[in-house]
Image 1 (cartoon, rainbow, N blue to C red):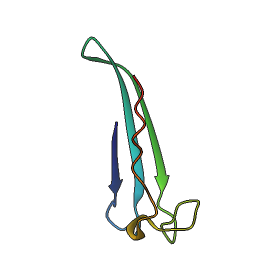
Image 2: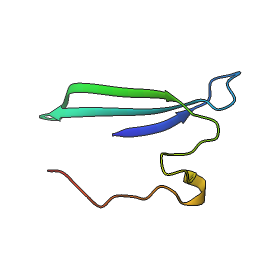
Image 3: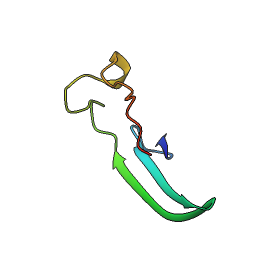
Length: 63
């Protein structure tokens, strides 16, 4: 999984992008992506910005 924030020329806030790949025997078998404009202000559903510590890293792992 790869996540990144793109700010193309002329776009103030940019877009949030997530790419997810499923590998089989070391080769890409499937690819999904999600692209979403960064809202104003950049807040998640609980109302705290990521910069203010509103997002937490999960320790949950799937096999």
